[in-house]
Amino acid sequence: MFRLYISVYICLEHTFVKTRIIIHFMEMTSNTNPKTYKYKVDYYLRKLPKDQYDVARNTLAVRMKVHVRTIDKYRYTKINSHYSIPSEHLFILANFFGVSMVDMFEQAPEVVNREQLIEEHKEKTFKDYNS
Image (tube, rainbow, N blue to C red):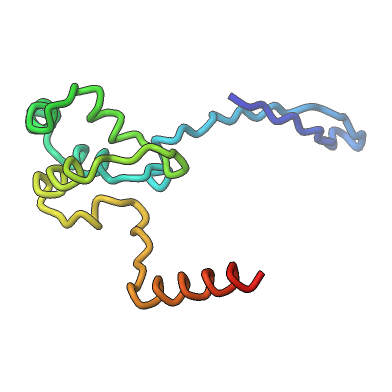
């Protein structure tokens, strides 16, 4: 929780009185901003009704041969985290929710053209050779 102190001058009967107003701000948690997560696992799970939500978490954990806490780790992986969901698990999650694998990402992965990669590699190799 944050506090903001503001000094305010109030005019009472033609005299100014200084008073302090304290404004309390609640710290916003990362759950309020879905853009902080790398994947949309949490988004898709929260769209399910409560009874399906519980079954989905357990079913997904069994299907992927992981613990339920691992599913929670997938749900709350931050964008700047080095952790990534294994591709086979991402595939299972995408199929379960009926979306494409790309739709599982909060920010779409960078699309790289094969020819562009080859050109960049040639340029880098040429520069390294000539230096």
